[in-house]
Length: 389
View 1 (tube, one colour):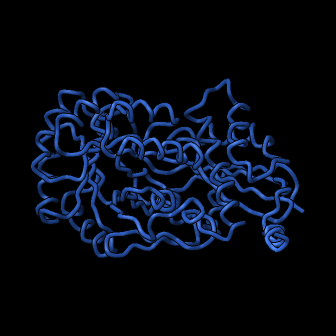
View 2 (cartoon, rainbow, N blue to C red; view 1 turned 180 degrees about the vertical axis):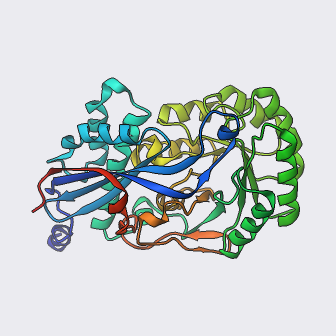
């Protein structure tokens, strides 16, 4: 018994550690080319030219360090930063291992603005940083800390299939993705002329062959009648899924499509709380649930969503942020998909590997990420709470 106690006392992580300092940064990552999906063609949004990143860095008295992030496409980045700035002092002096307790404390610090949207997305950056720190203290990758089911995850590319991309370039992009070892292709649909969508999907399916995994994403731009017609048209193309055919909050409409058609329905990326996901899960309004950890408030609430999805037998395909979601997808019992977007790569020194249609789960401690030198040039605002020693 004495030997067992000695082993426990020699464990590197101390139960008495405290958060000593927190640094948050607002970074605007420029995109090489303006990005357009169906929301642009319908006049609801302008082409996207940058991504606002909220980085959180957390340091402890014992020298622990964690890096986390959240993000916003188009408006919202400055709002996330301002909310994070208000609640960040709440972290000082807390034990970094008390992640659920800290999440709740941060949530109550901004309770008057709700438990979803910008409020939880700001919390998400801190939460991810705390999990990164915890995994590093255990000298484990995040996936292994959480209980990995696999060492690699199926991956599909989205960045090459946007609506602004001409058809001939679209076909070139699919070849590039396959040469990189990516195992699926997703196309954006939702053109004002539905026949254009059908022709583009038909051409890519012919180019890829009958069995190569192909998905489409309408980005919420169809009404119920149009979604019915397009889902019926797309049945012939052997798609892995049809994503966001309706407004992201139309759970009943998605449920009707999931019930009626053989092609699976996918949605969930725009939801920003566990309760919003629960409505879709209970109604079986999706076959592939697509939670986004930064949007839902970090890893802590993401794990609750994933647990519910597993209980109800849903398939999983977390949205965007592959640098984080490759770890989380690796823990899901049923084989998931991870979305391949190279957009965030300039922010980090490390790169994810793809091979034989799969994304390899990093084995470095924590997320396995460090910020690149280029980040400082894109930083618009930064503030530190507490004191580094």
